[in-house]
Image 1 (tube, helix red, strand yellow):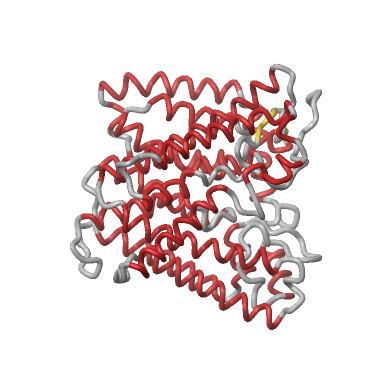
Image 2: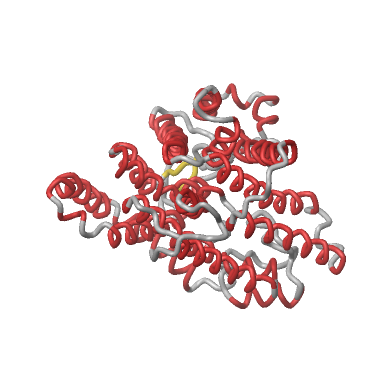
Length: 452
């Protein structure tokens, strides 16, 4: 094992981070750098005269999703959450003051209906199981409100981003902020190399003696789960704007951040990308660029084969073979439903564990434990939503279409495997796909019926 210890966070919020002087410690250098860089990036976005206030707010909501480190939180709300709240208030205020008619946005309608269902179900559960939320009532309400925030932000996105140029700007901003997050991750590695043990240091997956870092997220798992789903957006800027270096850095951080979940997601995204772009690989121009990258990638896999095998063992033991220990077996679900037949009510990953019961980590099983009999109906509605959107139209740009479809298909895999249900960046490919096809339709009620 290594000769250094993991260093988690001695603070739980931005208030504690600054009030108690943690920001002055060498271990916090990367977080102070992140604060300065984020402030500069946010100021850059907010001062763009070409874009409206609504566009800026909703863009920052999506851009700042990975920045959920305790140093960026107040009252459990992250920077992204705050901009999401501002975007929602902007949308509601604009809708009321300007007396806008309600736009029939399929994604927004689904999210609002889901949020209302969550709220009504939580009220019933509170009446039936009054002791369930003794210590978590406010947190549960806040988590449900986050779904409303996502719904209003999606509607604001639909209202504000009407041109391909503005959507291109949005995608590039999300990628730029992700690159900033990646930069902070590697800065932590540099600090460790020069002898400074930074806050947010972890040993990779607790299976191998490889240091990993929280970066701008709470820990390496959060970092991987929030950044890896940006694969489709990085793929878009790679094909559209030739940002090869950005894509290479994204791939590198995904491979060195030993997070079992994010590595599995990356493998899924990569497999779908190879399938979608298989014909492009053999073109002379593309072949000359991709072959060196593929060879470098294979070389990294061979060099890190022992580490990757350890991660595979973790996946097999906890995700596949693991029942009670991995929190992914039906026996654990049965315990939850036996004690709470009506479900716990929606609580995301934060409130997925009930008192005196084992941890539950499977995405779909946790969803059932929280929503009980409502879960199948919501999952069916999600599937029907995606089906309607994909049947409503076809994006003309083949590269954008393929990249977003990869994200949409992986959205289901992530939803079912992990407790990441209403993360903005995971919904981004579906939101973008729907926006592209809406631009060519004069009415949402009369969609184009061009096959995919």
